[in-house]
Length: 170
Ligand SMILES: [Zn+2]
Image 1: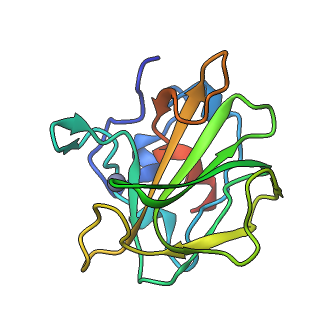
Image 2: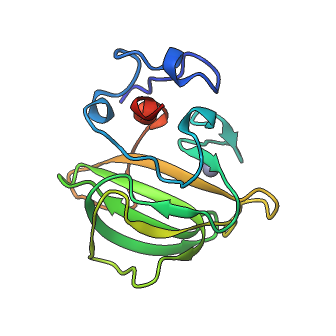
């Protein structure tokens, strides 16, 4: 799938996100912003940045450690996973089971969070941190969206850039 939504470097969501400029799969949705107290228009588009020889394929949303992280929409929490790069992570399907939302570097999970539970958009899932390979002095949420394959494997999918998802929230 073509990666769109990369016209303007950083900052200016309004200019970068006209209707033709980003994945239709995401354009049809009203994703909530996942980090409390941060203005969406201050998030830089880091989707195409290089990270250790790979494309980043995610957004880094900088925020103080301990800031609440919330589900971007309804859907099933399919996996709580701790990995070397991602640290404490959450994988959530969208309601139709077409997309998986990935939240990484969490400081800790929300109380009572468990695999298989149904999340509502805005539900607390955890707190911003630096677990995994995030720099200790740069807490952030690493947020990614993947299109699931036919096998619906939570760890496999093609990345979509969610940068334009919150233009309506400006
Ligand atoms: Zn990242």
